[in-house]
Length: 254
Image (cartoon, rainbow, N blue to C red; front, side, top):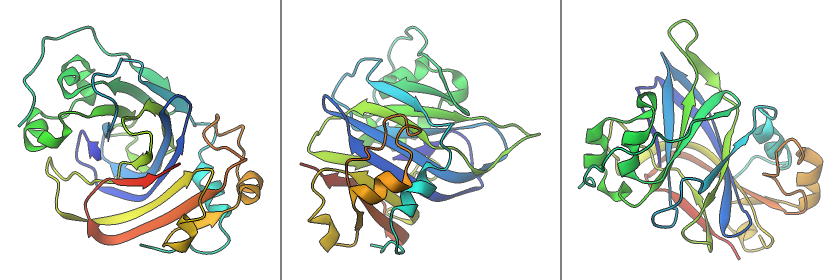
């Protein structure tokens, strides 16, 4: 699930990468083209285990690899086929803010901890009342830098992190759209999902495409990806476009 702290004029070309990490973690990278008149924070709701520690997310700086998703796309020679709020808690110590390339980022373990976040990153309280399904989620918050003189407009370099996942048998993609604090039943998608796993034989029989490990290694600079992309694994890609059921996406992994 993706939410914005302030109104945005446009969001397009969403691209998400996922891979299983060590010790039941998941690696995730998220990129998009966005236009906003001023500073805005993007909030991704994550399915972490209950009551995660404040270091349950490790942010990864991809400012040196802004074209990561262009390189991932190059591994595929053909066009990809398509297919009640918790009670407030007492205010604790402020949550850490991390400089991650062009972003300032924080991890929020629970909805209750948003009161500990820099006020620039918070969402209105009525959002949580409208979205009770987020009561057991954690959140990665990335502040896109911009102001009236230099608004956010266009592609931003991928934001990336590793997080402890509640279900190690799946990879999670935050694809739900939140519009003005509500979740419409259907939404317009412009997403490409990429994921790596050791066995992708079953994937190739569906709507997704699979690039072999050799193609991934040739197209992607694994060192610049800060360990995100494994050059020894194949990669699947799935294009989601047009009006679709407004849900998060998961894929099973061995």
